[in-house]
Image (tube, rainbow, N blue to C red):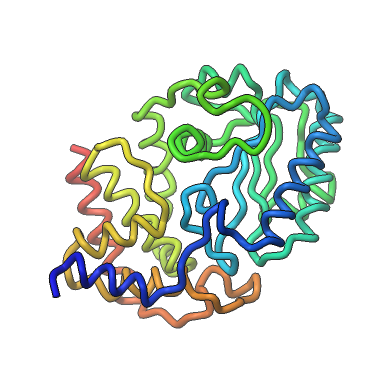
Length: 290
């Protein structure tokens, strides 16, 4: 059996990832209701709602994946309205049918079209922000920036899905490839710093594969974590194949894990192998960026 056939057979042995077209009915209904919630609150100030991330790229696994959105507003939001919207999102997230939560940033249409190097946002919500949002600890009066946004906007531009409003090509301008690579390598630098990879092993391993693909091939693709793992299995040194496969299998597993177990996927990990892969990735990235 050749390499391609072996990979095909291996992937068939894993649970199939979901796409927006094939996702569970309760997930689709929940997302459609989320769009309705935004329309009801923002009304004419809502230019569009866009799905990105694993569900848009056909690499979604309900026990592990989040639901990722970019919301585009026609104008800047008054800080009181921004707070109202964010509290509504946080409250709605509590009723989600999955372990993975909503991750959402709102930007203006002008920001989406011009995509500056430092991208400001009107509001942001993720599970890590949940208590802050509901506890009134978020400051909406001052302009905030998110270094992850160039990567998110690139995903929308290349592989996103318009759920409501202006079509993607009309709403979003071109994202600088340099800004994109700086955005993804910032997360990469966190993963390979110290022992951070041991905190969230499968996430770290899969994202390392994805970033090394970007730096190695420089072909302006945007891979999901699932696709990054496949690339890593094919292209990275064989001594790390078992680790990458384990990361992919944990990511793809249908096992329901608690919120506390999400970072490990409920699996045990060999710290020495993780740190060896960290060192390899750090050195390889340094060579590729020269």
